[in-house]
Image (cartoon, rainbow, N blue to C red; front, side):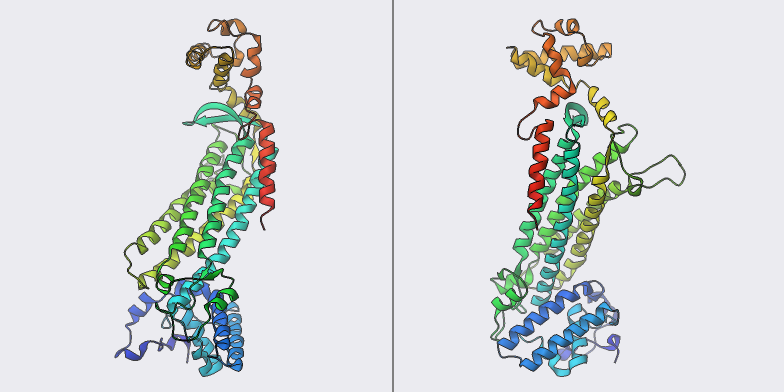
Length: 466
């Protein structure tokens, strides 16, 4: 009998006619939940181990189940298994194949559990493994970013507000701002992992089971911190998946902001950085073009991940306790969110360390737009002039600079003194870009010394992750 010719007879006893073929396909999840097979088998082995200790299975039956499940996994991974839509999902496909191998003993595996707690367990196991992979890739990205920041701690560029030149900063300082975003994202990811790491196995359909199960044992065997505390909640909520998608949306928002800056910086109008050719593509009609497709695509995928978050929130918003078929719709948004996050992190982790700063362009741009105007105002305050008056004086000097085409640092002492006699020849120490960034030598400041310290501290933090 082929897999496709089988139907899910586990629940068919009370039905008087077979399920419509379209309904079979419409309600089946095997098309996408088959990626849970390793975790389904792992959960089944833990469940069977517990059943043997509880006296529900004999030692021989346990061995047959474990050996059979391992064989099924090998068959799946070698491409020998044809997934069956009539068997609905990964759970019944695996169990059916197991029963084919070991006979009636395979049917005992489901004692004391339901597909409701089984799938909740599978998803948690799968997502936990994916979170560990994502956290490692996020760490790789941050490490490359911090190393580049240390390298570029003296590289001066314009800092912007409203995308207008504001004050000079260092490129390393800017990169460390990105790292701060990612550090918070990493913390959110760990929080998500902590909350999902509870075992629903044993909650059964919704009320628990009459069998003498040991939920502490199965939780321990599967690496969970402890069993969930309420059987109704265990099978019905997917807030852990929603929380992961919320993390994903925040992470992609941050990556999108970074992407926007990378895209601007690679343009001829900015010319701040060069991305190696392997991260770019060309044009089919314009031979001179070098398009920053990788950051553009990451920016675009942010909407995709945001959509998955909204989809899961909407999925859960009106569900009564306990399990409902609606929850079958949790997997595809979650799976795609995970895949998208991993791909975007890989792209960024490969790309960021390869960025080449065009230091001269950054420096020349920082000289434009009167970026040291605030430094002149602070200078006047130190001379005893109230800040509001200093602000007005500097505003007039900037207006003069616009008329004459001169930056503040390019004006003569006599030109500057026409706005305030308190200005002396020591003013030029604060009007240089180097003097401006060096003066902000405090925790969180853009001074090269502070950037190097912050990069070293960030590197130590990243080095402690395992």
